[in-house]
Length: 65
Image 1 (cartoon, rainbow, N blue to C red):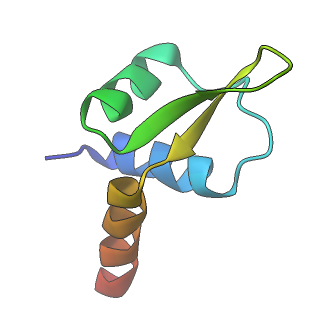
Image 2: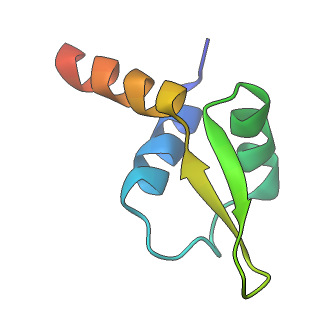
């Protein structure tokens, strides 16, 4: 089960342009649950992206609102 904090991080990732403020521990937990993947860019930067599983989870949460 995800904490409200982890769900909030997923929501931030969904619309984020900058990822500097994200805690690596938070990202690690989301990667471990296969909700986020880390993509390496040609520039060398690593960008977190929602997986289809993470996207499906956010869609389910939005239906509950």
